[in-house]
Length: 190
Image (cartoon, rainbow, N blue to C red; front, side, top):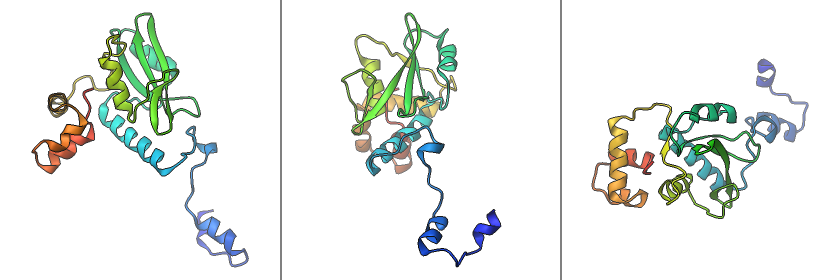
Protein backbone atom coordinates (compact mmCIF):
# COMPACT_ATOMS: atom_id res chain seq x y z
CA UNK A 1 0.00 0.00 0.00
CA UNK A 2 2.85 2.41 0.76
CA UNK A 3 4.51 1.63 -2.59
CA UNK A 4 1.22 2.20 -4.43
CA UNK A 5 0.72 5.63 -2.90
CA UNK A 6 4.22 6.67 -3.98
CA UNK A 7 3.35 6.08 -7.64
CA UNK A 8 1.38 8.90 -9.27
CA UNK A 9 -1.89 7.77 -10.84
CA UNK A 10 -2.39 9.76 -14.01
CA UNK A 11 -5.79 8.22 -14.77
CA UNK A 12 -7.64 10.00 -11.92
CA UNK A 13 -8.88 13.55 -11.76
CA UNK A 14 -6.82 16.36 -10.32
CA UNK A 15 -9.17 16.54 -7.31
CA UNK A 16 -8.69 12.84 -6.58
CA UNK A 17 -4.89 13.19 -6.77
CA UNK A 18 -4.95 16.26 -4.50
CA UNK A 19 -7.01 14.41 -1.88
CA UNK A 20 -4.60 11.46 -1.90
CA UNK A 21 -1.56 13.70 -1.52
CA UNK A 22 -2.91 15.56 1.55
CA UNK A 23 -1.64 14.38 4.91
CA UNK A 24 -4.11 12.39 7.00
CA UNK A 25 -6.36 14.69 9.00
CA UNK A 26 -7.87 13.41 12.26
CA UNK A 27 -11.62 13.09 12.22
CA UNK A 28 -14.19 12.62 14.94
CA UNK A 29 -14.24 8.94 13.98
CA UNK A 30 -10.66 8.32 15.16
CA UNK A 31 -10.51 10.57 18.25
CA UNK A 32 -12.84 11.14 21.16
CA UNK A 33 -12.25 14.90 21.01
CA UNK A 34 -14.67 17.09 19.09
CA UNK A 35 -13.52 19.34 16.25
CA UNK A 36 -12.35 22.83 17.15
CA UNK A 37 -14.61 25.73 16.20
CA UNK A 38 -11.68 28.03 15.48
CA UNK A 39 -7.91 28.32 15.62
CA UNK A 40 -8.04 30.24 18.92
CA UNK A 41 -9.78 27.33 20.70
CA UNK A 42 -7.21 24.92 19.25
CA UNK A 43 -4.39 27.14 20.56
CA UNK A 44 -5.95 27.38 24.04
CA UNK A 45 -6.39 23.60 24.37
CA UNK A 46 -2.90 22.97 22.96
CA UNK A 47 -1.29 25.41 25.44
CA UNK A 48 -3.40 24.02 28.29
CA UNK A 49 -2.31 20.47 27.51
CA UNK A 50 1.37 21.53 27.41
CA UNK A 51 1.07 23.24 30.78
CA UNK A 52 -0.84 20.28 32.21
CA UNK A 53 2.06 18.04 31.18
CA UNK A 54 4.41 20.40 33.04
CA UNK A 55 2.16 20.50 36.13
CA UNK A 56 2.67 16.89 37.18
CA UNK A 57 -0.98 16.45 38.20
CA UNK A 58 -2.28 15.67 34.71
CA UNK A 59 -2.77 11.93 34.33
CA UNK A 60 -3.94 11.76 30.70
CA UNK A 61 -6.22 8.88 29.76
CA UNK A 62 -7.58 7.36 32.96
CA UNK A 63 -10.94 5.86 33.85
CA UNK A 64 -13.08 7.26 36.64
CA UNK A 65 -12.49 4.05 38.60
CA UNK A 66 -8.70 4.40 38.33
CA UNK A 67 -8.84 8.06 39.40
CA UNK A 68 -11.09 7.32 42.36
CA UNK A 69 -8.87 4.43 43.43
CA UNK A 70 -5.80 6.73 43.45
CA UNK A 71 -7.63 9.37 45.49
CA UNK A 72 -9.42 7.02 47.90
CA UNK A 73 -6.83 7.23 50.70
CA UNK A 74 -5.70 10.80 50.05
CA UNK A 75 -6.66 13.77 52.25
CA UNK A 76 -9.86 15.65 51.45
CA UNK A 77 -9.24 18.28 48.77
CA UNK A 78 -6.58 16.31 46.86
CA UNK A 79 -7.23 16.52 43.11
CA UNK A 80 -5.95 15.50 39.69
CA UNK A 81 -6.83 16.28 36.09
CA UNK A 82 -7.41 13.50 33.58
CA UNK A 83 -8.74 13.14 30.05
CA UNK A 84 -12.50 12.94 29.93
CA UNK A 85 -14.07 9.80 28.59
CA UNK A 86 -17.00 11.84 27.28
CA UNK A 87 -16.74 12.64 23.58
CA UNK A 88 -17.42 16.38 23.77
CA UNK A 89 -15.34 17.13 26.89
CA UNK A 90 -11.55 17.45 27.02
CA UNK A 91 -10.77 17.17 30.74
CA UNK A 92 -12.24 15.93 34.01
CA UNK A 93 -11.38 17.02 37.54
CA UNK A 94 -11.25 14.13 40.01
CA UNK A 95 -10.91 15.02 43.69
CA UNK A 96 -11.25 13.60 47.18
CA UNK A 97 -14.44 14.98 48.72
CA UNK A 98 -15.41 14.38 52.36
CA UNK A 99 -17.82 11.63 51.25
CA UNK A 100 -15.14 10.00 49.06
CA UNK A 101 -13.66 10.46 45.58
CA UNK A 102 -15.73 12.40 43.04
CA UNK A 103 -15.32 13.60 39.47
CA UNK A 104 -16.71 16.55 37.56
CA UNK A 105 -16.37 17.48 33.90
CA UNK A 106 -14.46 20.62 32.94
CA UNK A 107 -16.40 22.24 30.12
CA UNK A 108 -14.80 24.37 27.43
CA UNK A 109 -17.19 26.73 25.65
CA UNK A 110 -16.69 30.15 24.11
CA UNK A 111 -12.94 29.90 24.81
CA UNK A 112 -13.61 29.55 28.56
CA UNK A 113 -13.29 26.77 31.11
CA UNK A 114 -15.84 26.00 33.82
CA UNK A 115 -16.92 23.11 35.98
CA UNK A 116 -20.07 21.39 34.74
CA UNK A 117 -23.07 23.14 36.28
CA UNK A 118 -21.08 26.18 37.48
CA UNK A 119 -21.60 29.72 36.27
CA UNK A 120 -17.96 30.66 37.03
CA UNK A 121 -15.93 30.85 33.78
CA UNK A 122 -12.17 31.32 33.32
CA UNK A 123 -9.94 31.94 30.32
CA UNK A 124 -7.50 29.36 31.72
CA UNK A 125 -7.98 25.94 33.30
CA UNK A 126 -5.33 26.89 35.86
CA UNK A 127 -7.16 30.06 36.85
CA UNK A 128 -10.20 27.85 37.45
CA UNK A 129 -8.11 25.57 39.70
CA UNK A 130 -6.55 28.53 41.53
CA UNK A 131 -10.03 29.95 42.13
CA UNK A 132 -11.27 26.72 43.71
CA UNK A 133 -8.08 26.14 45.73
CA UNK A 134 -8.31 29.64 47.20
CA UNK A 135 -12.08 29.68 47.79
CA UNK A 136 -13.31 29.74 51.41
CA UNK A 137 -14.95 26.32 50.94
CA UNK A 138 -11.52 24.80 50.12
CA UNK A 139 -13.03 21.95 48.09
CA UNK A 140 -9.65 21.69 46.34
CA UNK A 141 -6.50 21.87 48.44
CA UNK A 142 -3.54 20.22 46.75
CA UNK A 143 -2.82 18.45 43.47
CA UNK A 144 -2.07 14.74 43.34
CA UNK A 145 1.08 14.56 41.25
CA UNK A 146 2.49 11.53 39.45
CA UNK A 147 5.85 12.23 41.06
CA UNK A 148 5.21 13.01 44.70
CA UNK A 149 8.42 14.96 45.29
CA UNK A 150 8.80 18.17 43.31
CA UNK A 151 12.23 19.25 42.16
CA UNK A 152 13.93 22.22 43.74
CA UNK A 153 13.40 24.10 40.46
CA UNK A 154 9.65 23.44 40.59
CA UNK A 155 9.42 24.48 44.25
CA UNK A 156 11.36 27.68 43.53
CA UNK A 157 9.17 28.47 40.53
CA UNK A 158 6.04 28.02 42.65
CA UNK A 159 7.43 30.31 45.36
CA UNK A 160 8.45 32.97 42.83
CA UNK A 161 4.97 32.90 41.28
CA UNK A 162 3.36 33.16 44.75
CA UNK A 163 5.65 36.02 45.75
CA UNK A 164 5.37 38.11 42.58
CA UNK A 165 1.59 37.81 42.37
CA UNK A 166 0.92 35.37 39.55
CA UNK A 167 1.30 34.97 35.83
CA UNK A 168 0.93 38.61 34.81
CA UNK A 169 3.84 39.70 37.00
CA UNK A 170 6.31 37.15 35.57
CA UNK A 171 7.21 39.46 32.68
CA UNK A 172 8.26 42.21 35.09
CA UNK A 173 10.78 40.02 36.94
CA UNK A 174 14.35 41.02 35.97
CA UNK A 175 15.79 37.58 35.14
CA UNK A 176 17.47 36.06 32.11
CA UNK A 177 15.28 34.78 29.23
CA UNK A 178 15.92 31.10 30.00
CA UNK A 179 14.65 31.47 33.56
CA UNK A 180 11.73 33.57 32.34
CA UNK A 181 10.81 30.78 29.88
CA UNK A 182 10.92 28.29 32.76
CA UNK A 183 8.61 30.52 34.84
CA UNK A 184 6.23 30.84 31.88
CA UNK A 185 6.15 27.07 31.36
CA UNK A 186 3.89 26.81 34.43
CA UNK A 187 3.15 30.26 35.88
CA UNK A 188 0.59 29.18 38.49
CA UNK A 189 0.58 28.69 42.26
CA UNK A 190 -0.53 25.06 42.09
